[in-house]
Image 1 (cartoon, rainbow over the protein chains, first blue to last red):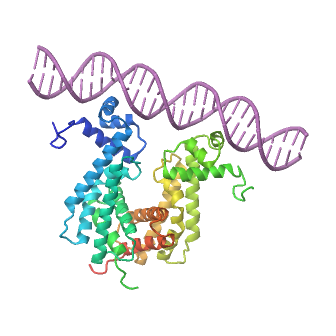
Image 2 (cartoon, rainbow over the protein chains, first blue to last red; image 1 turned 90 degrees about the horizontal axis):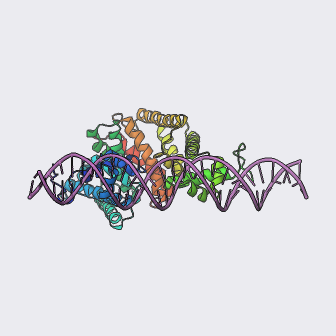
Length: 190
Length: 190
DNA sequence: TTCAGATGGTACAAAGGTGCCTCATACGAT
DNA sequence: ATCGTATGAGGCACCTTTGTACCATCTGAA
């Protein structure tokens, strides 16, 4: 059966490879091309037919992950809502992507367009943090860079804890938002 | 000159190797033995004389890092102080070790003794979290696993931000403690 | 000076990964 | 049924890394 998405190149094999590679490289960035092929259920030759080499595949994966994240965030963000609610919805949208997103942390992407897109993503988070500060949800004296780093880490940690079974998936976004906002909220008594 | 520490095996070369390996593998876990030797300023042959193979070196590094962390924490912890202050001092002690500690996150250590020691370390953090809950500094309804994960991540994030120059070193421990405690503190109004 | 130990450089073989290739086959469209 | 395409299996040459061995050199101690 042909996926409704991806009408252009290939139906199943390519998707299987992409999925397996993301999954595998998230756990083990040094995994072999053979292992990727094995986990994708395709021959190693087929893998090379779809992606010339390791960098090629890596770049495609990164672009897909960033695109997925952008879409999830765009769907979650409602600019008419408060920044606090936008943050909450962003956590809900992005945390489930943690397993697909995580391998980008360590991967060294050479492709310029991809790194630019990633930087732009962080900038967007920085903008959201600015709005949170304007709302008073985040104290103005906390460095924006710290808040952005925390959001990044919270997404990863939340997914990680869910994946390992220590935290219920339903609680993850709430815990993350609570950790961030009540942790960085204005001090009550100085 | 012979270091006062390490009286038993070798004076300088071994220490240089260990230092270079930790530093290098923290940034690039896949770095080659040759690269390690290069950064340590020794020949690859010398490296092999001190450490039979990669696993051997990795295990030694892990043990050293865990031991260093244990010592730093033990020196910082004062059981007569409040758990909150103990946490603060732990952050102060451990964050500067972030660069030497970080490569353990991804490294796959086979050695049983080492993994046990690491588990014990996490357990100790869990105990501290229990005390924090007893003090009311951390809400009882927050899963301990989540708090432990946050502490772990805060150490790493804090060091990371300091290393990249986005956060001042002097602020890191305070920011971390503030993020954690005020983020997980008892709710004021339900 | 002499000697033992440590080191650097180099060479070597084994092992594994990579990229490319061919061939037989299975599947779908015509 | 036939043809074209994608695939799986396997082979092959090339490269890097790894672990080992050998030898000349240097340094500190006797």
